[in-house]
Image (cartoon, rainbow, N blue to C red; front, side, top):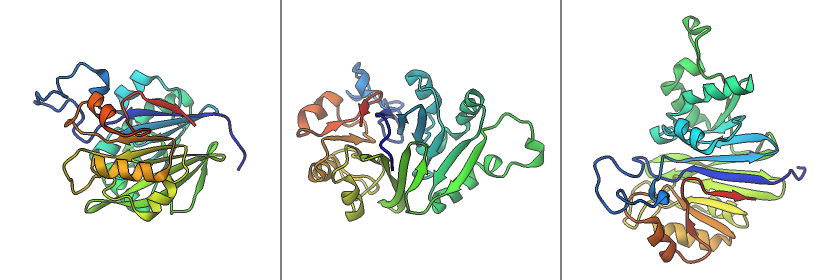
Length: 265
């Protein structure tokens, strides 16, 4: 693979499925005035050479797009079909209009079945939908082999997400690599191998208390330190802890991600 130009990963949403602040909560994090404590639902945007790759499209995707003003979404990766990762899919239609074409969507077969159930009108539009303003998406099932996606080489592989499964995403821009595993309950050997030597890693770390479907802060930090990644971040964070407190607690170079974090690789 040729060596493309610089790539930038932007965290659009760093929070868990409820978002932060949580509706009706008056904890210190939910009342915080630190903008880094305002954690919308998970989404990551990767840009290189004018190509935009979107990892997950949360219910907050429209507001994220307005806030961060990225210019293109040429391709989308869906890691799994929980509501906080797919319910912004219909808002891709504005990018169809801007770009004048369809957008490819890549997902593992089991995730694609979920997309078909939720968004049947996009996957198999009925005749009466002809001419309606809907997202135009080229749906592509992916195995665990890498595939070319603009200037990137992308690989999806399964990780446990409690009783469910999610995809971890490895994005290579030439020799440089980003790994995103925003929803996982175990740093499996395959995930550890992918993170080892990566330039940037975004890894699930929900809170201190154990959770059936997510890594704890301690589990995430341990896996990130073991990876040797120079820029490791914890993502999918709940409302239990202030961002400023996590910065003090996490050993360098591990940091908590926040909405709007941009990192070049």
